[in-house]
Length: 116
Picture 1: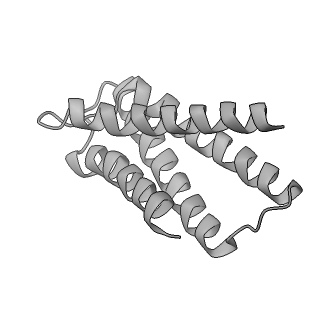
Picture 2: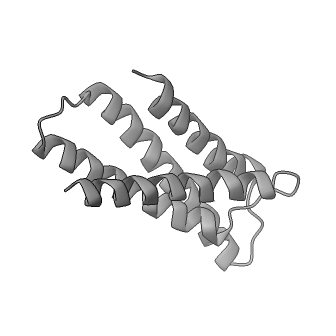
Picture 3: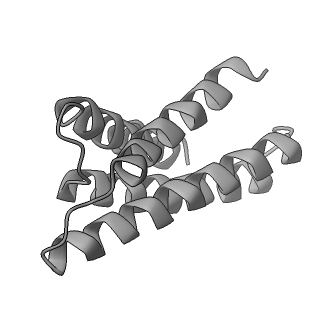
């Protein structure tokens, strides 16, 4: 179980890096790249699996924090989805949507690390 937990944390951090890294890489010409989309999926799936593992274990789960993180993760997922749909249609991604994807992921990372 420890190995599975470690792998899920690794994939969760990798997803966050893909979203925020992609956002910073395209900051001057904002868009939602494919890695941000994959990162949003990874964040949502691995986050839910990590909560499931925590609920099965002995540890205490802060349900308020999990609820905030889930709302932020869904926000990032939806923003990335809308951005990728615009790109597939050949349209330009609105600046607010592109910055919303990366900025919301950054806020989720702050919540994860600063809320104790």
